[in-house]
Length: 340
Ligand SMILES: Nc1ncnc2c1ncn2[C@@H]1O[C@H](COP(=O)(O)OP(=O)(O)OP(=O)(O)O)[C@@H](O)[C@H]1O
Ligand SMILES: [Mg+2]
Image 1: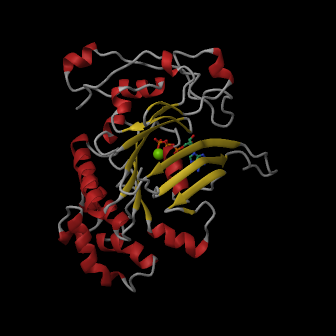
Image 2: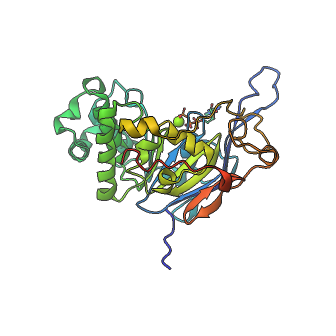
Image 3: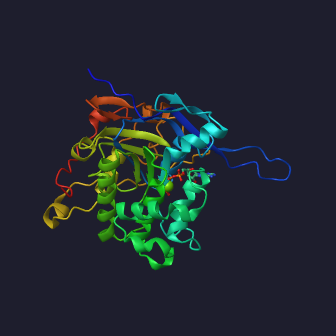
């Protein structure tokens, strides 16, 4: 059997934020468990879609892998090297190879910088050019690569639409020729009509430049076509992982079923007759998370064991893992007709 070494690997990764000790008298530390025991990997050239609602820990997972938030426990490996604790020059070099594209292209581009400065800045910071002007021909090539006119080079972000700005953001992420990109909800702030264009651009760039993406979204429909595998996150933990089709054809964790139920189906007949799973109840407090399943407070199928014991991810079919004690008893919710 051929084995590829993953480009990126997280093993039992946990991130905790201190949300307590701000008081003058050194108020006691209170830890918010934003990411708990998350393991995932990305093979070279692969796209992993990471999906979950707001606050589920997607951004923090991405930032931990990029080494931009402190890691409480677990390890991150990049190209076979444990990078959990690398520092200084080594970390700087590593960052050239791991870039991010952000959600809000209005927020993430400095309005006072020209497109030339925005895209060339990482090159300057990493000492690859001596001054911004030098990068002009290269920046034009990057603009062309992301489908922007090359005369955009001297203009400022305000001159562009959201979709165009996101193209500029992507060009900036590509400037250092990274192998790995964390795309953190890159289309969530854009009009639905523009979203597909940006996803398609990212798809094209991925094959052209052999990129690997951790593609974050809160909506399962956004990542469907670009992802090779999907990971569903709830309250800091992974609850379901699968290849590109299984979560859509056979969503198995009640939370995944609820996420899919929220995606509209374009066919009005199917839409009106479809089975949905709605969940009610409160998201758990991550400062004092429950001992058992973190989804138990909202799960319509909750039983005693769920309150006492946290379920681990386990394989229910090849390449399909679910963290639910009673997954075999959860009624099926097939949404194969969704948007395909
Ligand atoms: N710097 C921080 N300090 C304290 N708490 C934080 C910090 N960053 C994130 N959190 C908390 O960690 C949890 C996970 O946040 P995160 O931003 O990773 O979620 P997310 O899934 O990306 O959400 P969204 O869809 O809103 O972007 C949330 O409860 C959030 O409030
Ligand atoms: Mg986020």
